[in-house]
Image (cartoon, rainbow, N blue to C red; front, side, top):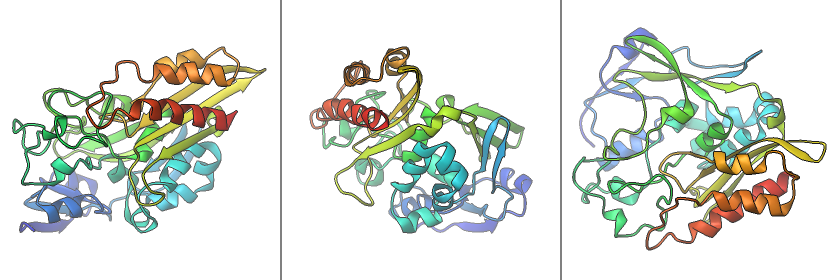
Length: 319
């Protein structure tokens, strides 16, 4: 591992004025440092900062970025009001990692693309301009939505998919003050700069997660399809919520994971559900729209029917 300086931030001002990598749970940072993918000269421990707590208000729920994933999954407010979020947390990684990982860190975790994690291979995310061997190499687990000629890596977070469906936001704190950004605008498509994954500025960190009030999110679920039952990333996942009244779908939220270069909201599928009866035929038509514009590679074409079937399974489960 590369040699580095280590310091503990006493307050937010000290943390954001520092230059280096922030350490919360360390479940991504430490792994990538061991592999030599990340080589920060300075590591700043932020665990003593006042960025914890789950607070309910008239505008929804606010969650401190240092809250651990396992605590959030077990929280009665989260499980009762936003079951798709609690379920997504509960099927993430392993119990040991969930006990350590912070929700802020989970939203910032890096891709599990094997080329990104192997420093002996080219990767535009790790070394801009070096190339993307996944496009013609082993690409079974790579993206079919939002990819570019520079990168086809999928986003790894389960929680972020659920939060995308909920239209959550993050409150960011940095050297120039604080700002709130919708999660849908926080993540960036790879384009020609896949090394720039989000809207964070130098020295800025996630302070808080904001879940808007959405009463009908109680009727929601998260379905994850993976190669094995535990400690595995999604080949495909679906986060769905339905507002059904009088045998009609008044509103809907649909997002997918494991198939996009970022957590993938599906507004066309949502629009096809609204105003319709909650029937299998309606669910199938909405799910079919999810693959519009998809660009499968040589080894991941199976994700086209898998995405459709996963969305239908999630919607049918709610019905």
